[in-house]
Length: 488
Ligand SMILES: Cc1cc2nc3c(=O)[nH]c(=O)nc-3n(C[C@H](O)[C@H](O)[C@H](O)COP(=O)(O)OP(=O)(O)OC[C@H]3O[C@@H](n4cnc5c(N)ncnc54)[C@H](O)[C@@H]3O)c2cc1C
Image (cartoon, rainbow, N blue to C red; front, side, top):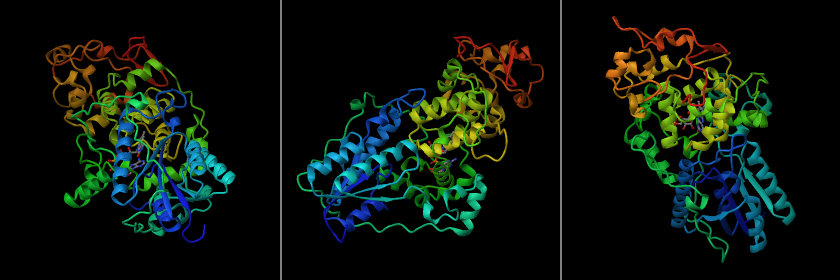
């Protein structure tokens, strides 16, 4: 396209913002009319690939709807609006090209993973058929893909530390773009379209849990407010390194992840890993083509996803995720390790459950981290396994986090809450806990946990907890009971 001419369709995807948005920036300088467009793609609301939970659960859907509303308001203040349609972007764009007759360019940010790349292919086909220019940008990483010291992408290191060191010593972050205060108008006569509701997707507004560590709404406005608060109003960023492993409350970490605004190096890395490995990030054998006999035991999996494993630190985290759509990084690492290393379940079951529930779900970060936790991704250390009891004691020493999410254990004081099965019958009864009734027996225990369970003088553990070596062994794991239907 030469100079200013015609109409540009700006297809917004995971970039629902005006700030530093190269798609809007380019269109503003290269078209007479600009159509910022968001499509609610029906494929995002179908079942997950293997286990068929809705791909977008209620927490993220609400966040998305808020983000769309917020962007529409922002764009309106700048003389434009956000056009909203329900449909596949390829179809919506084709209809707009035919309807308007003046479209000269379709502009969007490129993605890195298969389904998103398939959409891009479809868009290119439509544009080719109609003689419309395609203009794309790379915009979802802090360091631009073209500024990486590793070219082609196959040369991306498989060890994160090598990646980080190379970037820190050589690469630079590009400056942000100066965006226009007034935007070009929409093409004449175009309806902006109504924003759907939760009910339109067959979902209900989730109840906001007062215990949530993520009480934010979606949208660029909220994201900028959070930045202002975290960096300038409170200077919380100064203590991030000390607080980032926290579990309770809003301020232990940035909570930037769902806005895609502040991508740090891990986030960049997993996106580049997706570029390098393509579909392999979704494969059972992972990046290392490792043959591991993963199990697909749905009953055991239900215990994990419902927070009823009988391991309080795991259960607290899983319940927080279901109730709020958020879980701390510390929690995510632990429950992922528990699912893959303690339970030996197919890592993709966990990844798809996270995909369904996380407010900040991001395909590259999620699958990249799951591969890493499962020991088939980019972790140079072989067989890294978290010790659930040690982790609980290290990061929730007094048990307050567990008490918040597993109220049926509230009567157990201090750190003992992490190992209820090791308490005496008297201690359990004093706390109002009956294992197997008010709270489950652990579905599994690992030998290394015993190092962190200390008997009180004069107390002997509950007879079942004392039973010692497991009733059966499975991949080096001691099971306290065989997995019956009612195990959880
Ligand atoms: C099994 C598992 C699954 C995960 N799934 C996702 C996901 O779907 N989406 C997602 O954004 N993050 C994911 N993470 C990474 C991390 O847990 C979240 O980014 C973080 O908890 C979000 O909270 P925050 O914004 O307060 O993070 P902070 O600790 O404040 O970090 C700041 C930002 O850095 C980035 N970041 C930090 N750690 C990581 C990491 N390990 N991987 C990638 N980016 C990181 C995020 O953009 C984050 O917002 C996952 C981690 C694990 C172990």
